[in-house]
Image (cartoon, rainbow, N blue to C red; front, side):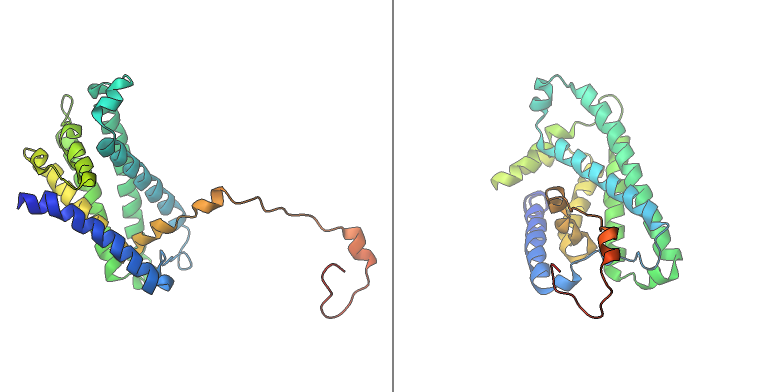
Length: 240
């Protein structure tokens, strides 16, 4: 069972993520969307959506730093384990609370705004359930093992995560990991596998190109020139 969970399940999740995303893009391009419900209600959405998206972005960055930056690297730049633990505890809790707050606001909107509720699918409900479980379990695990320097997952879960990229997962590192962290990891892998089959797939269509596109130049119209031109019916030639 240990080999199955920590040596096989991560690759199953990644395969489902990659293959599912390719399949979705190839056969469901018109469904590749957040299925926005802003047309039904926008006032609450304009608050809940930024709260959720900023929160989940902070959570993602925190996981990337915690799992894929070795402890020796932070120590070499003068960040002690105690300092890292405090930063992770405070920052992670803030990000988690922000994300959960955003999710609850979105859920409230979906449940009590009738047009939005009617547009909610079973996939949406499953996605919200797994996403909320992953965030809450991560916060509970962190806060439960927060005394002193807390549980140092960078000596176990972090190296295990990095070993997956060498195709030789070190499953022995996961022995002795607190149960709450193990459950959080399993739910997290389940969420990764679900991404292509839910509205979360839109994360791969983030408009990053907008950061690099040229400026759109707007020029005012010469009112004097327009006033001197006689009115004409129909289309005018370009450049006239």
